Amino acid sequence: MTPAPRFLTTPADICRSLVTHRLILRQLVRRDILSRYRKSALGMLWALLTPLLTFVIYAYVFSTILKVRFPSRVPDLDYNYGIILFSGLMLHFFITEVLTRSPVLVLENVNFVKKVVFPLEMLSLVATGSAAVTLGFNFVILVAAILFFNGTVPPTIALVPLVWIPFFAVVVGISWFFASLGVFLRDIGHVVGILSTVLLFGSPILFPPDTLPDFLKTLIWFNPLSVPVHATRDLALWGVMPDLQNLAIYTGVAAVFLWVGAFWFQRTKKGFADVV
Image 1 (cartoon, rainbow, N blue to C red):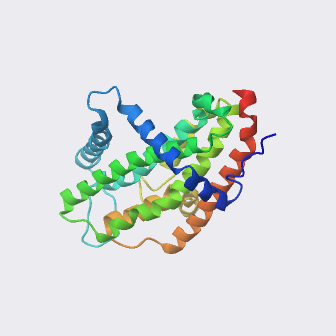
Image 2 (cartoon, rainbow, N blue to C red):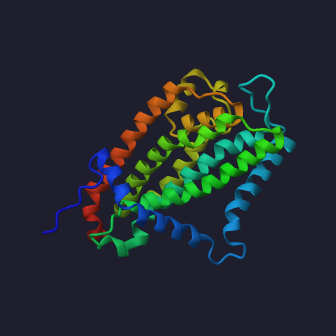
Image 3 (cartoon, rainbow, N blue to C red):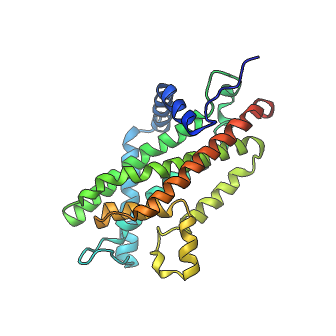
């Protein structure tokens, strides 16, 4: 009898799995990205055009038509609301893309389920990696917008990818949970759509937390988007360091999310073949 793989039972196993399967992960992410644009006329150019057009629309509607303003954290530094909004929305786009795909990841790759040598946990990492590439294009648009409107970008913007690392860990952990749950409970896909909306309106993406009642100010920080959105704006827009204590707590929580998601997926994937 073939022993069950030890991957993903401890944090060390998670890192070992990433190193062991890095080539498979890279190839699958590349294939996943190319498959999106293979039959389109503009191909990969859409990966840049989509966030660019999204930013232009939000900037025009909220800043020119609605004239919405977002309070600045730095004196004498004011940003177009479209830039502030887009800096948070791009993270929401990322988590929404991954979570929307997660419930059907295993169901859409049934041919891998009965292949003992294939690490099914890679499917969530592929979805996350593919979404991260899109997030990278969004970040390029954000940097270009800041440079266009302000003439310069703060040097702290180079640190933005670092504060995204624990956010990626949270997303992967949740993805593993939903990918497993989606095999046994097909209705979970409908729940994810509602959850995405809750994550958007329950975060500081659309409005500053200071405008909320005190009890909501505390509650909003339990949203997995709140800390990375706030830290991204601090580094990319205001040129200040984010709250390191909040980041440290968030990183610890992210590690727990990653491990729990991995443990759940590892324990439940033994029953995938019987269901699919």
